[in-house]
Image 1 (cartoon, rainbow, N blue to C red):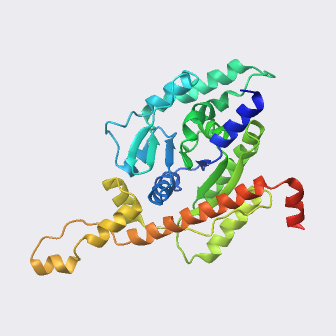
Image 2 (cartoon, rainbow, N blue to C red):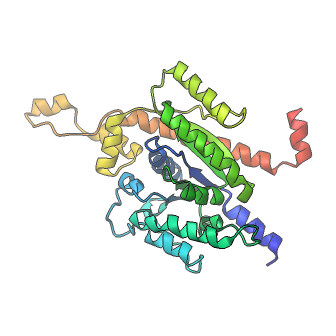
Image 3 (cartoon, rainbow, N blue to C red):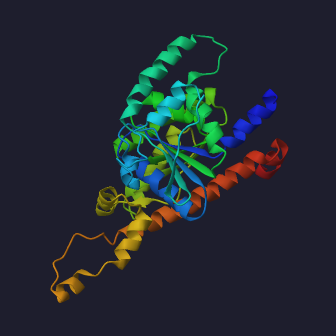
Length: 326
């Protein structure tokens, strides 16, 4: 196969790989990866989730922590160490249409490994960037999925660079507090550098997470910060994921996604019904799960809409794009 055909195959395989990243922790990256993936899978899209976090909170959200499929990141790091000589192992059927490449404590070795690879590459080397290692192992796997979502760790620019080199698109969750916005600005800096390795990398949008739906003044300030970070662009999704601490606790406690909690909440008896029966009330699922699930449904629809629009624009000849813009 010629170099051009090979490059096209690689571009196609990674065309719907989305890195979900913010340098700040606690801004909703894992929750968005898990729930956005779950919503897309429920809509009959084939979805792969890749966990690059040593804490492996994605395993908690999906209820697979310490299950037989939870390899704590061993398969991911082995595939990278062996330069893709063995196919990346995937935990299949975690949900219908939803598969996972697990993260965990084994990924602690990935940062020093990448440092070593980078130092060994040398300045001015004609060899491909070591940061294409994740892309290399994803290519044979990603082609079998409609969407691949990468859950990026906070405060680890080396693993973030690995994800950005493999991704076609970026989604950035942020809270409206200073820490979340600062983390977003740091990602904007990494984004610019990553495009030197991965010129096709594009920003799909930012998502406000854990916010009040009526806090319009705060949302305007956040939009202004995003605009400044990305040089005049304000790629903010209109869908916001609302603050619902009890639902977040239920999700981690039960290993269920918001739409699964929604079904459970609707089927449980009301507190007054338990009282009438003389039964002792037990800790149930918060009814706010329905609102949070609705947010994720709307986000999934908006992400697909924006993604298709971006893909259609990218497919148009340059002259057509200029005519459309005029």
